[in-house]
Length: 131
Image (spheres, rainbow, N blue to C red):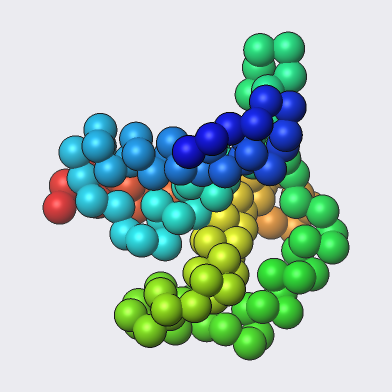
């Protein structure tokens, strides 16, 4: 993979694929596809500022976009049916929905009226580790 220095899309793709590489080669557990894709897409949004990672926050427009996608494409169709893998656009939508879910689980508590779900996510990961 070629990375263009200074090109945000190139760096985002590199971070995304590197997260897949790390998850598949250095974790002692098999992550569900939705989680691995969400994690890779989430990591792909990292921006480095003065040597510190910053995660891009979703805008209201992005939240509205995901709400519209959620009405038309269920996560069941996107993540558990093999025919979903035949469409690059559906894969892209699936990645975006997974990223949004992971973002909500990690950062939703920072938004007004959202419940803190970090403990639920930690419990889920512990269950994966336990098998």
